[in-house]
Length: 136
Image (cartoon, rainbow, N blue to C red; front, side, top):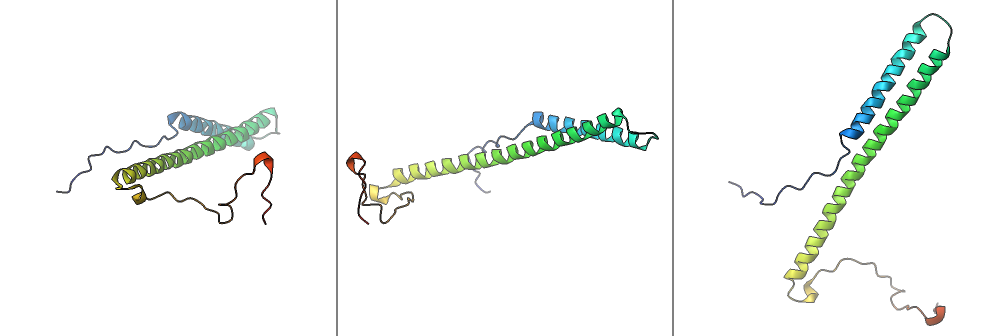
């Protein structure tokens, strides 16, 4: 039998919930209703009236609202996934640094985090009174 991991499963990342989905579905339902109403009015005999304009305006507006709410919900889900991944990465970095420092026999055994070192800027120090370094 394989040994089981004693650590609890990490909590699932935050996802946009039922409230967001409710408003997307509600807007889509209203859009479908307006489009059906517009199609029914279009197939009836007669000239275009204010009712046709009202149905067309409602159909277009609610469709745009449904699409925008759907895009917003998708972006929130994507941002929540990225945030959860970033939190996991920070915990891993923190734990690895803590474990490396605790297991090191001397400070020289700790693996340093990579830093950017610029060749020409390591010897340049700020001058007093705002004077610039004139070496070129």
